[in-house]
Length: 465
Image (tube, rainbow, N blue to C red; front, side):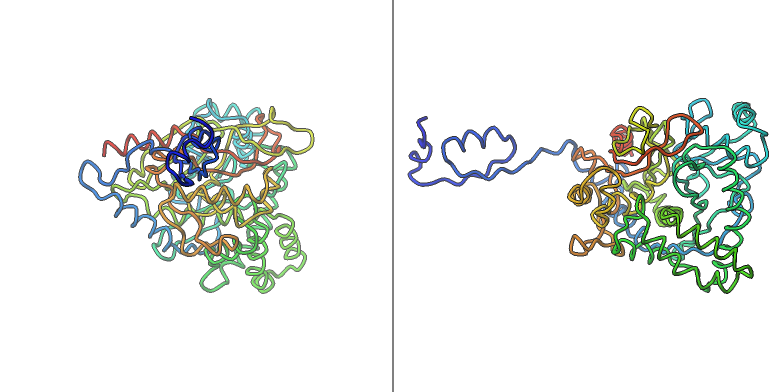
């Protein structure tokens, strides 16, 4: 057809909307036709509305996200893990991610286990600790099996102090250790005298000071309110916790002054928290766990209640099947590295901190935290686009967590396995990066997508309900 022939054929200028393949639009544009291109792909899978048993999936999901949003996590106290976490015992080590045995553990998780066994006095050095870990005398279990969460390697050993978070709406509890800071720390797989000295100071000084202060505050500290406010102050409460840590300090400082008889100890505690912008991470994580757990057990729900990684595997759980893990290989993180380290040093994705995205903040709220984009190797526009994309795979928007940059739109909430199957869009995560060898620690931070296999396996299982 001659140039402008298609225009002449219809006798007037054409305005065309092209849906799908860009090549069709290009052909028309070559003939001076005005074209609006709409990128669209047919759904990869049909939307399931009912289970084989006739359960209404939409109703189940509405109930699941409603429970998550209604949850009000409150920091009510602290305790020693073996004394306050139900079922804990002296030969139990909790770890991040889905179940794993010693022989399959990655370097940083092994390093953290070895360090914890030395810290506990169960081994005199790391070599003896490795032998003990391999002997079968130590029980390993996911933090998630004990209503707990742990960042990176996620190790919780019997003597470690933990925060106690209560969901005041549903009465369930969640637990997490205190945050050590960045660099050579146990949760990144580091061990050695400097690591043990810090852990003992945290047990002997930080813990009793915070415990007394927290338990003196009538009604506890409302973590949902702090997360909500932190999102308005530039945090996403996963990789950026500067505002959340500052808000926590504001809430706890008067109580520390009133309850700590030693001014120097009080000053040391204040300085430690003030110098550790990630301190609030170990509060936002159990807050997320406390909010998502009441959604577990709702028959027919396709909402994800757990995303967790152990550095070897990435695992998820779905509300309608709370006792089953769906697992895929952990992915490689793309990001920025500390001086002296490269991608070759990086361990695959690790940690329970993706409970934040599961609960409707963290990487899903990156649009609220433009500063985090630089930390993980992106731009503020990348952060906005990441959040906008996550709405496509979430069931609803959060009532209590909102994003100023999006006109206070609620954060994406309720990862729906069906929507991932339909769209092919995978959850976007941001995270720290641990060295692949035990004993070294943090090497960088970055972003990645969750692996497709675990979500598709869950979708197949849902089809058989």
